[in-house]
Each structure stands twice: as C-alpha cells, then as structure tokens.
Length: 400
Image (cartoon, rainbow, N blue to C red; front, top):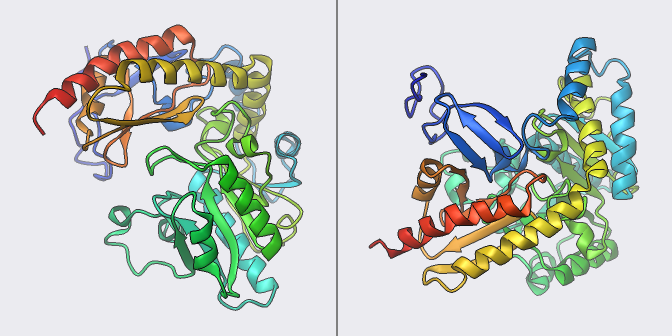
C-alpha cells in the first residue's frame, strides 16, 4: 500500500493547493489513486481528457507514434501538422493553423497577432478589448488580459494595451471603444472557464461579430476550454452561427497530450511571417498524432452528440436536485461544461467530493465546475449528481 502524498512536497514549487491524492491509472471516466481508491472523474484533467482514460482506440495510436518519432523540430516538415491543420480548417471554416503546446501559448500568439495586425495598419500602440472575469493564462501578457485582480496581484507592472468591458453588454463595448483609433481586436471566451462558467449570449456574439467587421477589428475567440466538442458543437461560438478571425485551442484537442493551436481566418492568416513567432515543442509528431486521432475518434463515436445529450441530462438532474435549494444561485453552461454557483465560497467541496469518490473543481471561489470526459454516459452523469447533490446540501446547511 502506498501512502498518500503530503499536501506539499519539499522539492516541488508550492504553486498548487493540492488535494492529497496521487492518481495511478484510469479507465473510461474512472480513475484510481495509488491506494486503490476509485473516483468518478467529472473534471477530466480540467476539460483535457476528451476521450477519458485508457481509450482503446487512442492508446495504440500513441504507442505506435512513440515507437516511430516523438519530436523532430520545426526546422523540418511535420506531416502530422498538415493532417491536423487540414481537419481544423475543415471543422472551423477558417484557413490556417499555428501549433504550440498550451492554451497560454495559443492565447499569447493571438495577442501578438492582434498587435502586429495593428502595427501593419500603422497603429503605433494597438489596444485589445478584453473582458471582466476573463482568464487567458498566467504569462505576463495573458495575465494582463485576464480579468482577475487576485491572479494579477504581485506581478505588476502589467502589460498595457487592454480595454476591459463587462460581458454581454454591447452598449458598454461601444462606449468603451468610441473614438479610440487604436483598438484592433476583441478577445473573449465563448464560455468563460476559470471566471466561473459564464456564457456569452448568442445575440451578443452576433453583435460583436458585426461590430468587428464594421470596424475592421479582429474577432479573437478563446476556445481553449469550451471548444473541442465540449458544448455539442466543435467550437462553442458555432451555436451563434458566427466565425472568428483568430481562435486559440488547446486542452481537449490532444486528449491529454500537451497541444495548443491558433486557427486563423483570411484576415489574420498572413500576419505572421518567418521569424515573427515560433516554438520548440509545438507541432511535434506525438502531439499531432494525438490531435488527429482525437478528432477521428470523436467523429467515429459521435461524441459531439453525446456531449449535448448527456450534458443536457446532467444539467436537468442538477436543476432537479439543487435548483430550488437555498444558497444555490444558478446552474449554467452548455453540454459537458457546467457550473453550479453557490451563494458563498465553496472551495472545501473539492476535497469533500474527492473523499466521496468524485473529482470536481471549484472556480471563481463559489462555482462548482463540471467538465468530464465527453464519453460520459447518462448513467454516469446520474452518479455524479447522486454524489454531489448531498454534499452541496450539507455544505449549504452549515453555518458559514
């Protein structure tokens, strides 16, 4: 029997308030820790493990790739890049792709694209519209674009060039940018992840697309967490019938293998030239194989439809069990990206759920986030609710 790890390690930087669990292996939507305890995985590695764990189609493909070549270099052509880029272009209706390794890198590349777009138009100090409660990463630039003072604290001076606006308020966007010739782009998540599972309304998405077209701005949509089939369409903005000019992707694209991508449409695809941007690990053969196989398996197994139907089932079950409970403010989201907002901070529920055999996270202090693998069944969704609902009710019944 292996002892569970200490809350912190003397040798690993203390950057995570970790749950004292070390996972050993997984199968489907279940994982086991080093002591043999089983958990239902409703977090999916934070919306990463699209195909769950030990998928019978993915694992042999990755083993095959590892036996051939894992990494070469972007000095050379990587055939997998062409294959994955072609699929992403087909699915998005856009034209070109740059590959990197993380969502942060994809968002950083998007910010560079917007700035160079401005400079190419003769704008010396380009500005980008970003949103309250947004989260785009923890590099200095993406941190500056993020709308969370707690995350930013201690890392100033932040990067300039951002105009911040509230969600779903087109008049606020117009007012904040009126008479400003330096604005070059609008940048947001279709459904905010770390900010508390906050969706952009369909009508608002259409209004911003129209405004960007009129003003000749880039519409840049961060689909890192809400993309890759999580809402029941390949990309969450597709519910509004719009198309961005720049779309960062990551997380679920590689089913656990680190991968990021920036998909660009005609207005942005030619901005970067050799020497403007690069990466050591981005677009490596292993990551490309993981992306190609993930998309293939998602199509073969009908996982977009599954995300939509099981997600609706899960949301309805949560509303039935918790919707009228005092202290539950809202249950929101789409597909298998759901948030349950409570009236007070509820970080303690992460450990309590783990003790009960369920993996979740709490984001924005008071929002329970559920982003399970897209292979989850309705029966497994019911199991999530059967574990989570009593924990929430007991927590809310306690004196704060």
